[in-house]
Image (cartoon, rainbow, N blue to C red; front, top):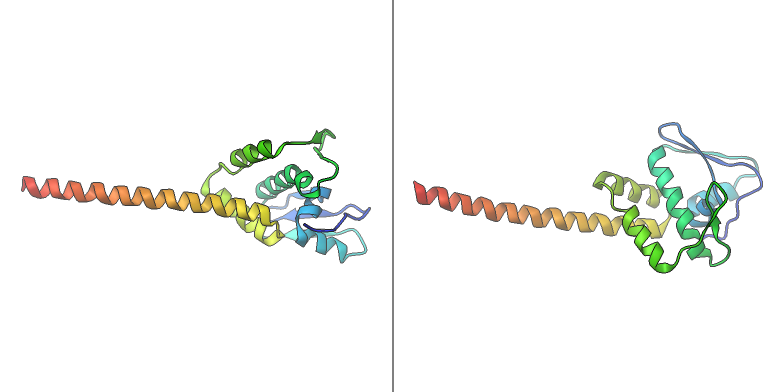
Length: 159
């Protein structure tokens, strides 16, 4: 957890596909990388994230918005429309399952972004999902191999 609070100035993140995002309190709280970059600057900052797309950064920010209250244990974070986000542990757990239930490439990109931005909780979530997907793929490969062996045996029997 970082001890960073965003400066009064407006700080932005620019993604690899040119999208700009305002740096939120939730992101500076959850991301040690962003916190350090802002803390080290005396003026407004536009941080370029050359390896993170807008879609992925949007997901990272959403994740941080949901998890910052859990991490800070103080006031709830607010959504862009100003409504507070206050979820129970169980609701956060369910939200995480739904959030990470995306295609493997997106999970990989989330993992890479969370690694670069130093958001350990998101990195852990993405790593666990990738591990789960890899295990499924290997199991399916094993099943396919067994089916192929059976088909070869049947073909030999008919020869």
